[in-house]
Length: 133
Image 1 (tube, rainbow, N blue to C red):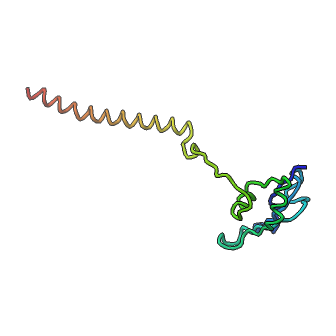
Image 2: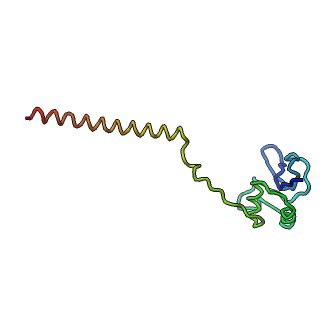
Image 3: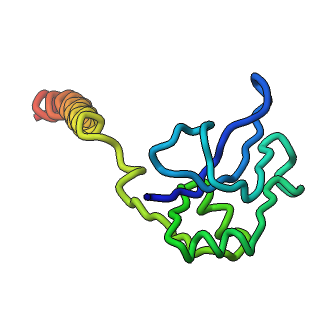
């Protein structure tokens, strides 16, 4: 049986409140669970007590092979109960392929326009030099 430590939503419409629970991975999000380990109230200020977790029970379930979800792993990392690896995606900030193509076309058009302006500025100067001779 694959165990997950995850969030089960409670609260009313537009007023979320979550329970941190241990459940079988196949059970529904808000359905049957094995044990409740704590709670998370996202409506409270971030510097307050938003997350409450029973550390002993979390350690117990982690030792029995329960896998925390990403969000719960963040909470456990803040509490010092589990280690969360920092994610690094250096390509995330790069523009997409089509945006890069558009930028290249725009740059080429600007260079062509600058060359045309330079040629237009040089042409009257050459014409004046030719008439002066």
